[in-house]
Amino acid sequence: MIYCTRCLYHNKHPLNITFDERGVCSGCLIHEEKDNLDWSVRFKRLKKIVYAYKKKNNNYDCIVPVTGGQDSFFIVHTVKKRLGLNPLLVSYNSHYNTLGGLRNLSLIRTIFDCDYIQKVISPEIVKKINLTTLESFGSMYWHVIAGQTVFPVQVAIDLNIPLIIWGVHQGCDQVGMFSHMDEVEMTRKFRKEHDLMTFEAHNLLNINPELKEHEVSEYNYPEDKELARVGVRGIYLSNFIRWDSKGQHEKMIKKYNYETYKQIRTADSYNNMDCNFYNGIHDYLKILKHGYSKITDHVTREIRLKRLSREVGIKIVEKYQNLKSDDFELFFKFNRINQKYFRKIEEKFRNKKFWHKEKNGWSLKYKPKKTIKSDLLKTVKLRSSHNFNFLINNKDNKNELFLLHRAWRK
Ligand SMILES: [Zn+2]
Image (cartoon, rainbow, N blue to C red; front, side):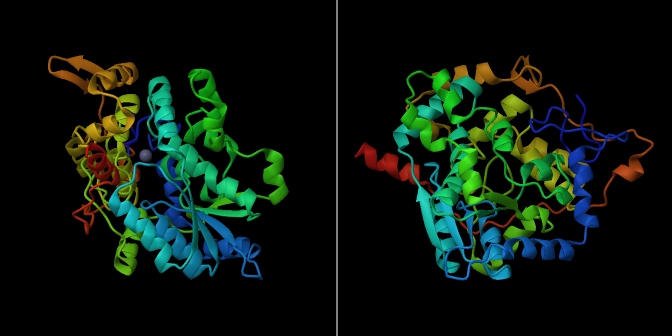
């Protein structure tokens, strides 16, 4: 196992990663562009691209996909206040909502005064899909990604709004799959291969014969000829703005009162606070399958932005990655499964490349070395402070599901 000499990613990263002769990963190398590019020039370029789509007749200029968490506030703020566009906001209801996330979603529509539409798939269909994806590739999040990445495209076609504006491109930001200068755009290929773990909606029908065509058809990506008819394109703001999720969220907290909420398995209280399970059971499955969890993503991001040293980052990862989140029971109830069922899933998807069994249970085989013996260390190491503080302004984030279960019991 090879770990990057600058960040904490290993060479089995699911988005694929490469290393240079000093052992620095492609994600870190592309990240250097954040400090080298002239971002005012990049932003002018963004303006030029989007202004071609500005409508003169009060129609929508673009679509902005939103959730109650992540970078939604920053994206809508940029699109509406800085670019002066009139966006239509769209979201996919994951059914995993926290109340804080729902409040954020309500707030974003109000403060930015935007029209908004939401896609809601029946919860019973979602549960059926969940059991299929859990059993076949260990994911309870497939339907969320599939829904979030397809619904904006369907709306673009239905309402004839060609431009979709996304926030960050994960392939570029995490593993340096592309340069910012490539200005990579949304594609069916990236969605299938990376977002959907190679499983399109119709593939689920072969896996689970009990699933019916009409139950998964809403997750189908539109045909190429439909995309071409409207001229749909999806651009990423992270190619034109120096992306700093933590800094951006803190501006949004100050400016608009974006709600944040304490998480158990990561210190980042900003991203995915709208989801009951993302930083919980979903993150637990991630470490089983890939040998690292969200805290490694968050620490790596902060190391690259020079707010954290690698040494301190390693300690922070060790502190968080084995903590047990408190969402398992809720997830079991929602999907009508039990601990025994989930044990089988755990056994099936625990990747033995990363895990070995000891007397007291399973533990990870590898971890990044604290000190790196390298003649080239000076060119690898980044200057950094030790700031890993995240603001928490919402102490009560009791989830929507929790309230529903209370109601069902009555
Ligand atoms: Zn790296």
